[in-house]
Length: 138
Image (tube, rainbow, N blue to C red):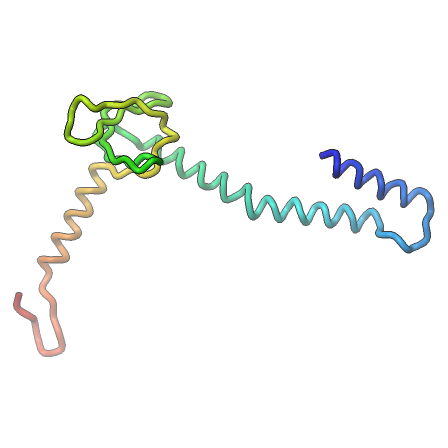
């Protein structure tokens, strides 16, 4: 912020001293600064906000029984959900239950999603395939 303040002060001093047209005008300097700030907003800030909103929506839909993957790559099943902590059961061992922060969840697959995927796979395999010459037998 100090750099921007110094830059604006320099431009203001150049404009008030009445220098000939050898320097850059204050309007052009301010325009460049606005363009640079807009560029950083579009490239860095906006996508990060969008990603955070998607993660918050995913965490809101989290419920016991959902399969998750943590940011460290562990797969587990959600046992209980609190405001900012989740108790996750890892593996087949019922004694391995670990509380973790919701920010440590990378992916969620709910039970309904897994049932829908199984149904679509079954439908695809049971459909008869047809060709130009008629239906193919399995």
